[in-house]
Image 1 (cartoon, helix red, strand yellow):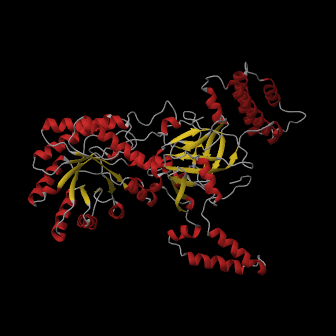
Image 2: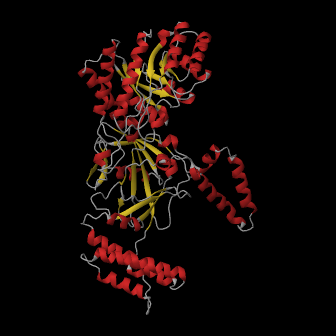
Image 3: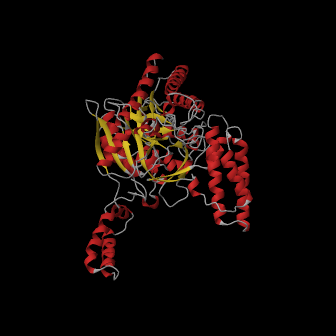
Length: 613
């Protein structure tokens, strides 16, 4: 079973010999990399980064756009920037910049810390674009960047920002940064992120404000620094039609501004929104277009508008963050325990004399076959409802209830086995009743916040055993003390996993496409923090190399981040051990040593009773 990897995997990940493999170098199995890491002592969840995947996706962007620039004889050039809000982590940003040297590929910042990152790590000559609301300090940083010789554009979100730029220009002098205008379009995207675009969106200038901005720039003789217009209609745009509509509107605004005297205006930044396929089921897709179609439409429409309006064909800028970042990271999570609802005959506690309905259930269990499976299944479910009602009324005891639950589950298992080759929608509903609960050593709130907050699904699959048919309908529990920390079994997009004995073997699940937003939005619920991460690169022989490990924070570091005085905590705990009358004096030193061992570990679990993890 490939868990839909041909739908979402984009040939970054493949299934070979029953294992997930990385499609690079000698194609190592992800499970082998995990075992390597665990032999080094890392037992909790692990995030793996694959820089070659970043490079592959950036190359795909440039290749497709340059293909259509050549095909349509388009005179503008293609540029791209990575929006840092999607992933600001150093092992992502620094490797991204290494992988994209020699391309017109830069960084986008939306805050002062992000701008400092961009100014520090962007490759020489590549663009920096600054979006979002800005104060005088942030605008001053933009001027400092320009004085450093960097190719920076300050995108104006409101007229007050333009006025501040004009003020700072007087104070700091030349060279000035380039100026961009974010336009507020009537067009918007589709889906849960659509509100970031459209006329009621948070950012951008209306037509009235655009005219006023142009007048201000002319009055202050800075019109030559207006080089870009920018728009953004939303993240994860699932359909191409809103993109085309927005391009027509923005292209015409660009042409009109050129005609109104913006002679240096030669760039259109079409923002982000290029979608990623998260679905792992054939009948459910996240997007209805390809990168090829996207690039073709953008180039064609902008050329058509520019030619019709008799203005220069602009350089095209794209802020495709999710497309570049999502696939590069895989979260690998150990299964700690199975909370099974499967019972066997050993669990039965039949009496010499049982209630008639239980005797009937026992008869159904012994005589069910392929022909009567559906009928007997329905009968058993009816009997269970009746018996549970009798228990509530006090007519049967706990032993009888135990026998009811065991027998019904045994009947369901037999029915599924008899009907497994038949296309019955009812089977999925049945499997929903007997799903296996897999306890995973991670936090959904930390590592998959978009699942918790937005219902965004991510491809998930075992790392091995893929040549064995999974038989357990699975729901996934994290280790937080919160009922929302669960990915429940969904019969419309079911997840089936293997029946494993965790006392004898390890079992790992991989969550894929988690490289965009999940780390930056992750919250420290129950003080579970960012998991240990590794960068996986490949040497000249195609062998994988583990680089730049960043270990998950230990408990004292976590508390220090919350502004606790960790020295005071250590002092208090040590004193309470020394003052305890329950600990013999000759054991107190050992107890203190045990305490410090725990404090030096991260907050994820090492083992659960009955588990090897």
